[in-house]
Amino acid sequence: MEWVKIFSSLAEAREKLLSGKPRLLVVYGRRITLVHYGDDFYAVQDACTHNQESLSKGHVNHVGEIICPWHNYRFELKTGRAMDSSCRALATYPIKTDESGFFIGI
Image (cartoon, rainbow, N blue to C red; front, side, top):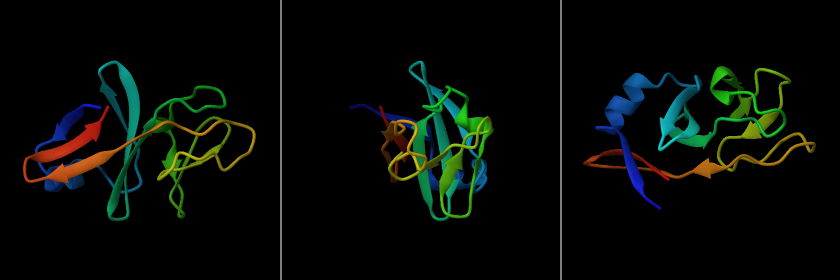
């Protein structure tokens, strides 16, 4: 796994990512949805496993699930687990922060 720097600091990440608003990242050709929710950050694959719609176009509900904008399929941000039994879980990516920046593991 390689750690890829996304922001120069945790403060910059908090400033640029609105809480509950998914944001698309393309890292080494991978489409990843990055979400700031509560005090935490999450990174999941951008394509819904049901019909490949971009999850970065969706929203996050009050219990920390990312909702696909097309058919409203729900996925737990922390684990990627599909809350609807009819589709696969999402791939998730680890995030770490330290004094040198905000990173995603690819």
